[in-house]
Length: 313
Image (cartoon, rainbow, N blue to C red; front, side, top):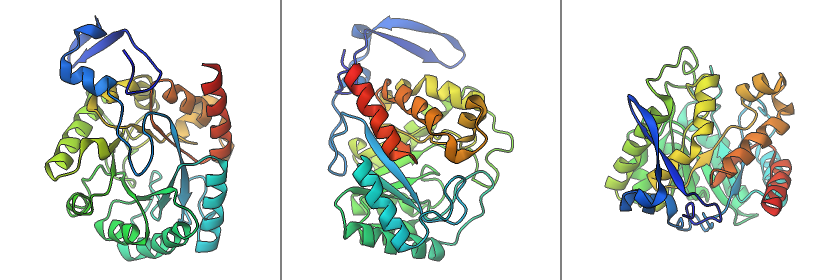
């Protein structure tokens, strides 16, 4: 069977159940609704074909993000960064004004708006590329969409601000719902799961259903397992090995693993901005499981690797 409208195929499916050993079944034995979620082509989202991989360029307008803090702070630097990313192959720009690195402090909504809305407006004046606002707050999302953002990307999975999900439904704007255990200040203290893959899946399934109930279409909801957000290295690796599981939600999948600590640990590179090789290895492994959106710092390098991966497959 084709995987979510791509040229990737599968013949067998591993069935995961809590408290039981996994079993393999033939794809033809899948229930009809599950088979549809796993095989149906994804609908366009924010003007993009979701049946092929996309690169989301990370554009932090913060002074304290873990690997690029201050690089794109200010409108001029951000616009230059955005132009470079688009030229290098980014089809989405993810603009954020609050660092979500482990231990990061809370940023008031007014300050976050001041960091992001002018940048988004300036970028929108230069390009029609999709722009996502990386925020947990309704006030910030409202200002960003008014400035030209086309996607709302919430790292809290719409659990932080009760007004954000209804706002997105009212605006009819596509969203990304991410799983995180805890908030950035505390999430890496001692993350625990019964079964990290099934626990994250259950959370995303519940949040997608709640967003649907508000009026958002499932095809316009992106899911993100939240690598590094309240996860140990073993948790991250388990999720990366099982990314294809999340196609069962019937939504495009986003992976944001770029430059993260586990890449430095396994790849033996302590300097975050020198982790492009490891980040690209993870990105290509995700593409091989049909992940549609790769959120990365190193756009040109990832785009080059992805083109070669597609050519030799």
